[in-house]
Image (cartoon, rainbow, N blue to C red; front, side, top):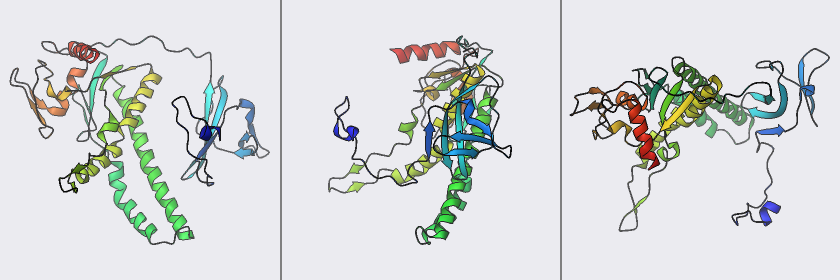
Length: 324
């Protein structure tokens, strides 16, 4: 009630308190857990002794390493059951504080997109998996069947569970693939250069256009909705978070470069070559470079040996430009 009646530091108050259904929250946390809460029952099964709940049997995804202490636990409800996630700590593990300096031997640049999920500066093209698109027809059939069932009936609940499990399968397929891709990209380098993309602006709705007669004019939102679906299916923001996590775990480094105009410059001579989004081939009139547009974009991001002003000089030039 204090959040509702008393304003915060910005002078705003929260919404009126409302009653929440039993399915409103999908998780709850225990901020104070320890190794003593992990026990075995009379049958020898691993159990977690949760306060006010009691012994709950569970299966380890992986055992807690020796020397680590359990600090907190979060119980999570998903489509196929309940899970518990532990936060563990070991103060004897040293923290990595030395940053790796990028060189021409330990670095690569990566350009993310939709035509190709990722294109590296060493010429590797990674295709878009499209997990949601491949399951979209199956999902639509289940949703049509769900719409014909009486709400909250037993068949309706069964179909709701099938739809939730299908969404969970798609999300897990995407997450597994992105983790494998992140480790693959770091298999032959220690520093990765990326464009500093603003993902939220890419999936933003088109602005409404109002005509002189007071009616709305076509603004291309119907076409943009299909693009937004592909962007959400690619989950670029999730992949960037995974890439940063894998880099931290391996002791490697991620460097983000200003994304403005990276595909409009030649990687060899850094001269500006304007091109529209529909033009997929880079042709430089100054130095004569001919290559795929997606391959031209990540090449100057990495500090690779280049021509006049290329490689690391390009990164330093972009960094100076962004600081001005």
